[in-house]
View 1 (tube, protein in one colour):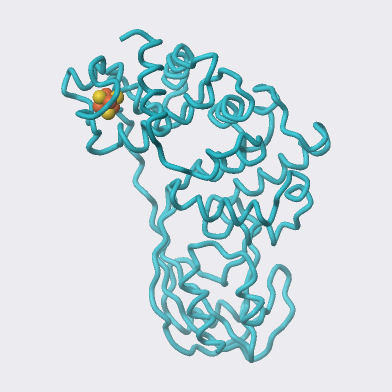
View 2: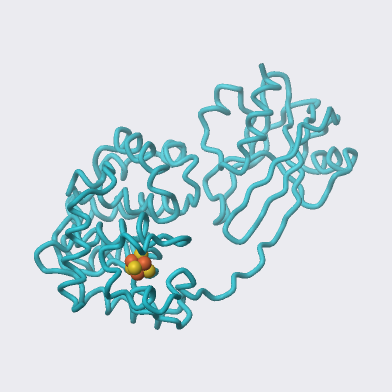
Length: 347
Ligand code: SF4
């Protein structure tokens, strides 16, 4: 099968029926951009409800550019990888300042915006602006590796370049956006990571991976590093009708609020001593359970503890908040269980 036949077969298959996702009903560059950023680390089914809520809250680039950080983080809460939301806002400000609030119809200019890499610039350019540009994410990479029976390890810049060049040969000038969506659909529903549906695949006859019987083994990925485990004591410190929260500034949780926590400590007396050194003398109440959160390279094993503070001093970077304020603030999914426990304690 030559390039044209591959492209036609994939497009015909896509045209015969595909998942009806809200961002496929628009060519509005802002909406396409938001969907592509959300889809970077999150499944399409999960993104649907966030996408619609986010766009109701921020219907234009200007609304996003003007948002305060807490509201933005709240709108992103649950999607994780919060640096995406911060980059979105930085990019929105640049789009307002440099391009009058309209996304530029230019791959290089898109690529220069925060949070937009090769894949996202290619996706926005092809879907929103009809520019024939390859958009290669993990799904597309998998389809190509299998179709061409590429057994070299993926994950290197050289390999990404090779696959991008290959996809660029396949992008049709007349329907680049439909092709980008069709390739993503292939990766999501047909050429799936496990159990690819080769027997009903539109390009099976010319798929080298299928012919060689190695499709399901591909692509070859470099071995993942083991995830580091951190044991954390998460402290729900209450004084009267308020609890203590901390705003975190580092990359993983920047701009979000969490409860005070301590690494590798379980002794109640030491937990209280720790709070005392922070200027909040406390008494220990009770354990509130265990929670686990898996980040990409890190696992948090969290024991949640209830403490009562003797007073509520004002401290730099910390706030005492009521139950209603706690519900309204952006907290990472990692501390969802602790928030629930805190809310129950504050009834
Ligand atoms: S035949 Fe199988 S391996 Fe080849 S592209 Fe189709 S689903 Fe993927």
